[in-house]
Image (cartoon, rainbow, N blue to C red; front, side, top):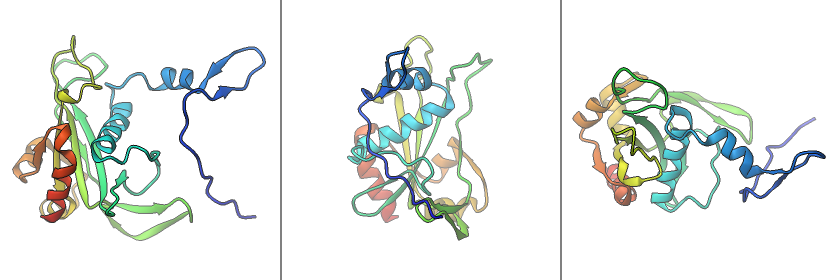
Length: 194
């Protein structure tokens, strides 16, 4: 038996959870599961969405198991990584921004096969830093509280090789393009030329 990849459509949030005794919609689940947008997991998904929004590709749906996070209309593949100084848990001090950049074997979810070459799958990395440092006013939905650092994968490969992580200091030393939300797309285009 062969079971093809299941195609899914973008949801509205109004889809009903089928139950005889409880009336809830998909948005109720989203609110329950994804409201902590300061913590590492959901902040990373939000960062991907913000970059998709900045690049005008937010009309698509996120494929969590794809080899890279986003793809522009011109075919540029983007990996988005997120970090922050503040976390949703109790902290003794600000977190040090560190981003994961391991080489991977790309997985084709439609064919259920892995590539034979281990590499960084995207053309460009966008390191999204929730840079705000005030717990009272932190709001990950405010794009003014974010800094974006854009760098080509080629530059990463040439300078950090097999490293699985990279610090913000190293990203800056590699002359990543620092930009605000409104300049993310232009920065990606410029980094991809480098």
